[in-house]
Image (cartoon, rainbow, N blue to C red; front, top):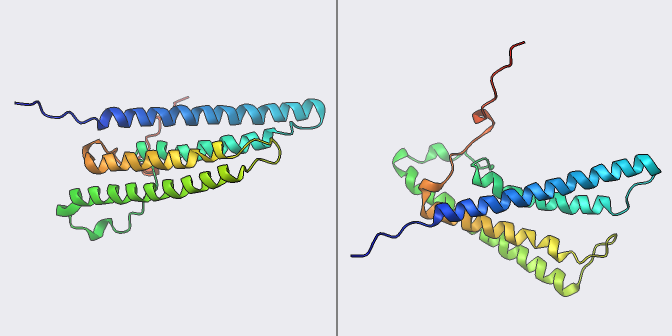
Length: 180
C-alpha cells in the first residue's frame, strides 16, 4: 500500500511569497537609497545625480509588479465582489475554484503577452536613453511576476484550503490607542 501523496502547495506557496517579499524589499530599499542620494547630492552640489531618476523608476517598476504577488499571497489584492451574492452558498466551494482557475488563466495570458514584449525588446536591442542599458532585463520582471501569479492561483484552485483569507481595509487591525 502506497502512502498518500503529500501536497507540495504549502511549501511552494511559502517559497514564492518569500521570493516576492525579498524582491520587493530590495527594490524599495534601492528606490529609497537612490532618491535620498539624489536629494542629498542636489542639496550639496546644486545638481542631481543624472541617472538617479531612471534607476528609481526601474526600482519602482519591480516593486509595483512584484508587489501584486505580495498582495495576492496575503489575500489583500483587489477583486470585484459585485457578483458574490449572485451565487448560492452551496456553490461557494466550486466558485472559489472557478475564480482561482480564471485568475490563473488571466495571469498566464498576461505572462505570455509580457514574454512576447520582452522577446521583441531583446530582438530590437532597445536601450534606456540615460543609462544605455538594455531594457529587457527590467521588463523580464513582468512575465516572471505574472507567471508566479498564474502558478499561485492554479495552486489555490487545486488546494483552496491554502488560499489566504481575503482582507480589505475594514479587516486591518489597528493597534490599541496609547493612553497618555
